[in-house]
Image (cartoon, rainbow, N blue to C red; front, side, top):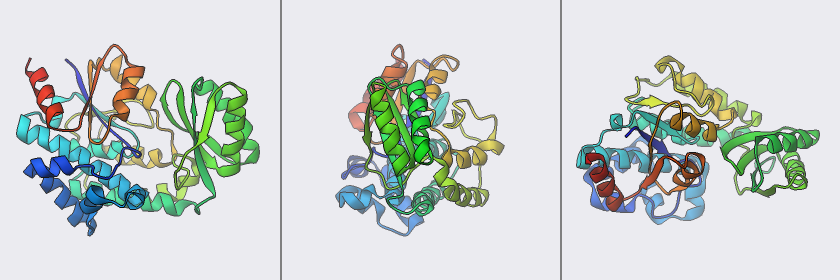
Length: 315
């Protein structure tokens, strides 16, 4: 078995996330308490009890999703003897790339929490609310169709492909009139399109001010060699060493999340036979099943998942 641990991105948050982990495992409680302390806020209480609109705020959702992913990674290691290094590769979707780095020891947990808090705030600051938008193109959507849609939409301003998630699911991002025009063109070309309920146009050139903030923040933290090989969002290739980690994470703020290509690389060039999603939800598991159907894909959310996974690894 060649294993990859993958880490979910924004949209995986929900009220109650992490509660079972907190109640069951002391090491998970330690993770949530450390994140709270690093941020100077009661984030876990917000995760457990809501309100949902506060949890969904980018600056809260990003560190919350990371905290659950790292809690799962620490439970696997302490309670089941499965260290992150058991996975030859790690990768994460957008903010999930930070979770992958935290699980693999690239960044400390406290630094990762602070980086993601800042990332969420910086992304929100980058453009006034209402100026930008994002939309999902689904159904018959592929890269060629999305590029044609964005080309048509660019008559009204900046619009680019933000997330290449899997065949039939591409997200575009930019100024609202351009995104709306691109959606209309996509519909003409046979795809379905819908505006997303997001607060900023992520992974677009409009996020350049946030990229500058992250460049400064990443320059101030300690970066270690990760315990597993990390496949980066913006290249869909393995990183070549710790010296390029900060630059890739800065590029990621404005660049495309090349998730479909990342999973394809892992399954083909990387030889991955099992994708295990660590954290909240099963979004990446569903994507992996569509992108690499020959591989085994599973989500590790709670005790029953951990026990079954540990038993499978043993044999």
